Length: 486
Image 1 (cartoon, rainbow, N blue to C red):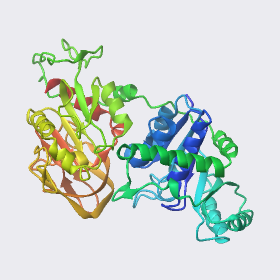
Image 2: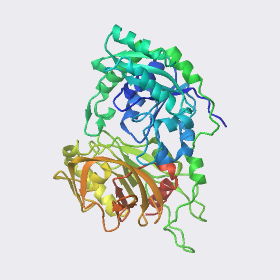
Image 3: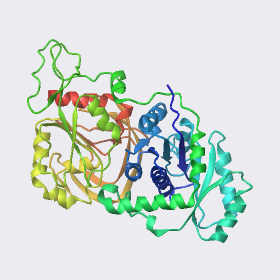
Image 4: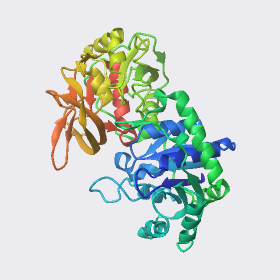
């Protein structure tokens, strides 16, 4: 099978050049023309895809070659872009910047090559004129396999400044596809981990995205950009499918029943029957309710996680720990992803009824998967405020930013992984949990300074590591199976 969706990658020489403004604005401008736009983001970032979703009305999806492997980039892209007229992929950092110590792995350039997509280079021209030609020439010639199809000049100060930049770039042979002036209203607020997520400023975010779209539509040649996207070669791959991914992944070890034992009765509750079967004679599969934390405090989640849980037979129900005083009816498992609980510590702590419900669920042995913000929420306290108390650990804000990819190995058996299972993850936080690991840690982190981190207690798996389950679909199947049998 092939994927022939027109596509382009928005990249830059460095962070802070305006990639998010241009990519989001381009998505909004194409959508305003009636096109179905597929939004994508290179790397592990959760926040930019929220703005992309506002611009396009579709789920923003990540393309991370470190977390998922190079072989999944094209299939995951095709999955997200299915049925779309055009796709826009926002890059990460500088065009050739990748995972530390891994060469070009997970760089925007690598993803562009894997997608056979042309690159549009966004250049912050605010402090240069003729030198822009040398900069663009270097990026164009560095890797002949990366096709830079055009340049968008950002933060241009005046007509005279624009004329100087265009004159300099004539010698490079790369067309100028847009010129954007300095416009304050498209700025989006940031804090300790980057942009403020859409869920926390919905109205203002809508206005910001609209302003980005108007600026890009007014300053860029949309016809030329669309033509560049159409020049992308077809991808010889099938789109990723959660059901097929589960079918091709090794089955997880099942804790119940033991060989030769009588299968347990199906769980009692408001679960709906499913036509799926796990292959054990006499056992009828059901759809256990898996509650997934959402709302402003927990905005970090990859769309593929919920899709895999559903494909594994779960009924996925989203709830908001800031407002909901009870877990969804019939909850058999809980997933609490990343976000900003430190910003909403007061409200999370004040929702004592829900904190108690989470603690009771966890203490019952039900499967609970918590990443980063979820880890903090399960702690005894966060910055002195009571949290769920599932883990005998305290969390606090820190001045130090912990950031980077991680190569991890499961230390013991948990609801997510069998001992020795290898996963790649990403850390991004300004908090500290003390102690950093329980008596049964979640992961052993490999590298120059090996360590253990996280907690495995009863059915709880809590860790700072963000992981992408598309790289190991069996994680979702294992979690749902534990929901059925716990």
